[in-house]
Amino acid sequence: KNEVEQSPQNLTAQEGEFITINCSYSVGISALHWLQQHPGGGIVSLFMLSSGKKKHGRLIATINIQEKHSSLHITASHPRDSAVYICAVYTSGTYKYIFGTGTRLKVLA
Amino acid sequence: DSGVTQTPKHLITATGQRVTLRCSPRSGDLSVYWYQQSLDQGLQFLIQYYNGEERAKGNILERFSAQQFPDLHSELNLSSLELGDSALYFCASSFQTGLDTQYFGPGTRLTVL
Image (cartoon, rainbow over all chains, first blue to last red; front, side):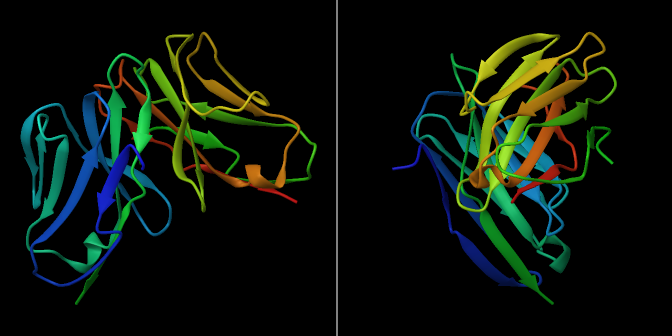
């Protein structure tokens, strides 16, 4: 079993839909990062969370430390949101990063 | 543009060879991270340097080594290359630690023939 699991692996949505991507982890962490990888390969950091909730534009990220679970929500999805979304945990004590396998999102116009 | 630069963008070489990938972090960032992304294994953390010193080591093979220089740029050296080393290699930088936002470079695509 992977230490960081993401679901779903693939997601197709219609423009305007509310989208949720989930990340569960089994290790102790200091922080959790959500990354976006564009079709061209470039990676952008969306959020870094150690507790609670963060919002940036149409994106919302939440984390529940006790349940070892985080969610990334996209409201009013748009075709330009089509990308791979990757969850990464920064482990406590060892300062290493462990990545989920990513969620490939396609938003149709 | 993240402010992180990586050279070269593409590299094609043969098995058994040695290559050096270079990364310049964002101005003011002290930490540099190296990652490998292959089709079958996804993104993997290789190593982190902070202000010239190794801070954390991930799944970095013994054939690979890295260093961060006084001007804070970093190099990743890959030797005795194998076909399985073909991958995208990303560098990222952050102000200090893993609790800071990371800014990713555009990556170096390595092809080993």
